[in-house]
Image 1 (cartoon, one colour):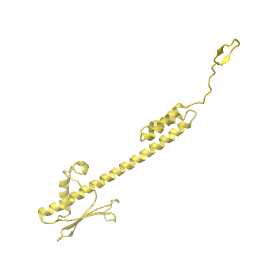
Image 2 (cartoon, rainbow, N blue to C red):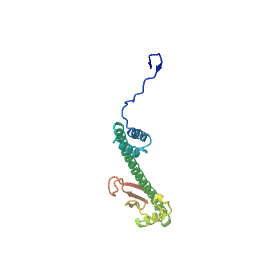
Image 3 (cartoon, one colour):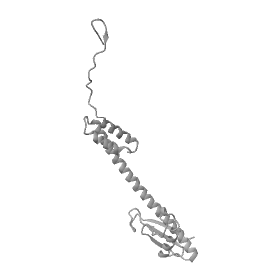
Image 4 (spheres, rainbow, N blue to C red):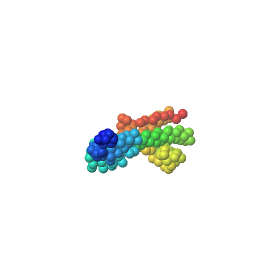
Amino acid sequence: MTQDSIGNFSAPAATPSQGKPSNVIGLVGFIMALVSLVTCGLLAPISLIVSVIGLFKNPKGFAIAGAIISFLVIVVVTVSAWAIIAGLQQAGSSFQQGVVVGVAQEEIVTFYNANNRMPDQAELQAAVDATMTLFPAFLGGGGPVQFPYDYTYTVLTPNDYEYELTFPGSDGQLGTSDDLKETGRVP
C-alpha cells in the first residue's frame, strides 16, 4: 500500500504477472497416465494421445513423462493379457485331455463288461466318440470328436485286464520322455 501526500492509502497499480509458461495438455496427459497405472491401463491409450499432442507445446517435461508412462503401461498390459490368454488356452487343452482320458477309461470298463473282452483301438475310439456327443461343446463334445492328440491304447496283460493310455506331453509329440501315461485295470 502506498500513502499519497494528503495521507490517503491506495493499492499499488496492477502489473501483468510474468509466470512460467505452462503446458496444460502435457500436464493432463501426465495425470491421465498416472491414473492409468491404477486402472489397469484403461486410460493409457488416451493419455498417450494427449501426451503426444502436449509434446508440440513448451515446456515438454510433463508431456514426455506422460507419453513414456502411457507407452510402458500399454506394453505391460498387452504382454500380461497375452500371457493370461495363453495360460487359459493351455489349461483348457489340459482339461479337455483329462476329460477324454476319463471317458476312455470308463469306456474300456463298459466295453469289457458288455463284451467280456478288452476293446481294440478302433472300438475304443468309437465308444469314446459316442460318449463325447453327450458332453457340452466346451468340454470338446457336441459331436463325434477325435482325441485332442495322438494317443496309444495298449492292453498290457490280457489275463489281468491291465491297459495303458499314452498321450503326448507338453511337446505335443507321442513317444517322447514327457508323454502322459494312464494305466488302469478292469475290475
